[in-house]
Image 1 (cartoon, rainbow, N blue to C red):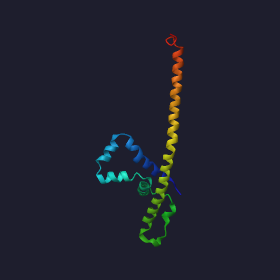
Image 2 (cartoon, helix red, strand yellow):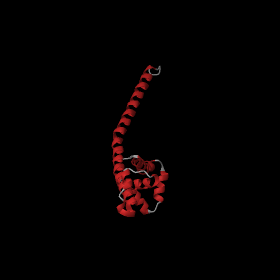
Image 3 (cartoon, helix red, strand yellow):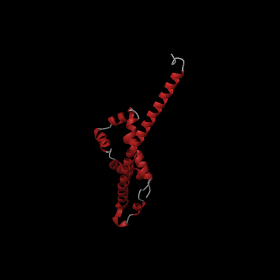
Image 4 (tube, rainbow, N blue to C red):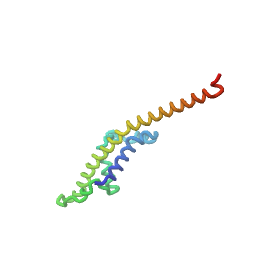
Length: 143
C-alpha cells in the first residue's frame, strides 16, 4: 500500500474546503461567481469520503499514484474496462483513507487549540505579574 495519494488527497481537501474560504474574500467571491449547480456541488462535496473519491480519481490521473498497486494489474478477462475498474476501486479505497485522515486531523484540532489557548493565558498572566512587580518597584508605584 502506498500513502502518497492519500496524503495529497487529505491536503487538497483541507485546502479547498477548510483553508481557502478563511484566507480572504477572493475564494468566496470566486465561488459566488460560479453557476448555481457548481456552488451546490461544492457545498455537497464537504463530505471527506465523497470529495476524497473524486480527488483520488483526479490525482491518480494526474500523478499515476496507486494507493493499492495490485489494482493496476487486474485480470484481463474484464476486457477493455479493466483499467477503469482498477482506477475506480483504487479511488474508493483512497476515499476511505482520506476520510479517516480528515477525521484524525479534526480529532487533533481540539486538544491542540486548548493547549494553545492555555499557553496564551499562561503567558498573559506571566507578563501581567512582571508588569505588577515592575510597577511596585518603580518610584511612581511607591507613592
